[in-house]
Length: 192
Length: 414
Image 1 (cartoon, one colour):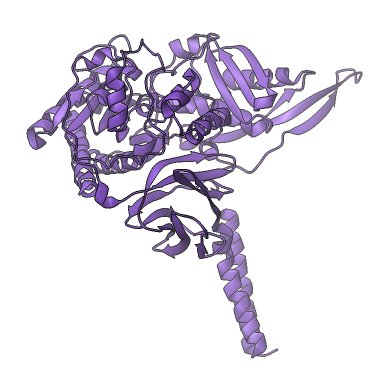
Image 2 (tube, chains in turn cyan, red):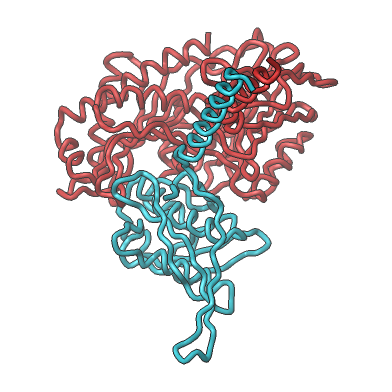
């Protein structure tokens, strides 16, 4: 092997490493696909086993336009819809140190999963609209906080429909059309 | 020497790898239907694009590198399409649909899962451009809650003959989807300004109790004055005092008064108290529900008797909600012009041009945008909104954007 060939090979190797580094370090807008991890834990006396899943919840931050993730564990109930309900309650309850874009007093009245349409229907109490602070951005923040987190953690759900007080609502605060279901827009999410 | 060549090839491949990996693969297909040709660009991931209508061709400009299966794809046996080509220049890819003769976009929409950009094209003769119709002022428009958008003369005539529908009733005549080419735009004569919220609907409220509804009205009145004094164009307002006007009525006022531009003015609010800056939206018309899309497609296929084909309220509502569809390209351009001026004059954070399914924009049958001036939820920006000078600046920025759009729009009409 001549000196020139060795030099070219060295340069090729360096170029390859640089290319890989650029690919790996390039800021990714959208988070990688995610499957919640399943965990099993014994009870206090070791008698019963409780199932958990580790979900990845994205919250607003004051320093970024995108939502950032934290991991939380939730218990797996027998019914699938109960799992969704627990997850939505987790979203509504917020998280210390993170901003959940949900008006105070908002509660989930009921929840239905329409498997044939791969759609989750969420019915919130009327405080959601009554206490909503207004603003286009606030509306979009609430909608995609719910839709993106749900669809990201539960792949079988492809879209989310919102009801307020048991009825269809035209908008939350006069901007975004709430009568149609929403598909996720993962541009709102950013990985670690 | 051979080893050197191999090593060199390896080097080039290594350097090219990131570019190849980030290239966007786009599939293309077309279908000829009676009266129109459907063209579909499909990709595994979403992409942003701009459309440019050129004589004999339609161009899709996509930032970055995008590739079709081949640089030039000939289309056999199509009465309208000749071939589709793909070029990369100035950091953007240009997908070009070459026509046999002239064609016009009848309708365009975006579908998800997988991401698709769809164009329905019809044959057109540029020399057959219809003359600008005389302006028809329709009095009492505020009473016409759900009057239809006047997408063309026939629809307008049909609408004239129908009694006014009840409030929020979707049974008004929806935009035509009967295969007729969209009419060419005519010179701008009327602009509709929509001050957001009003009456009992305060909109967002700042920490010092500043109300969005007051700010939007103040800016709108300043803007109206500027347009009228500098251009002599006719300006209509969806409200000119502190009154509550439904979103449907706002769209209906603009449609009934044959406005050719719809400017909705708002002040923003966020759960993030530090959020600041200005942004301009045009509507996103993704067919979010496959069932709704299927209904709309059925309507497109039934062209024997368009009058009879509209049978149920749901279908009419879908078509109604698509009133903005054929203006989306101009709406995007209008948003771009206004946002550029806001950036220049306000000196605040540029949050850009965005799309969202805004109800007030969906039913307007003209280029339409919603401007989020600055954040009333941000203490510093709320303070600025209390200054008359700052409101003048906002109005001036919007006026400048509108002026540039009028010039651009004029070039389309010529």
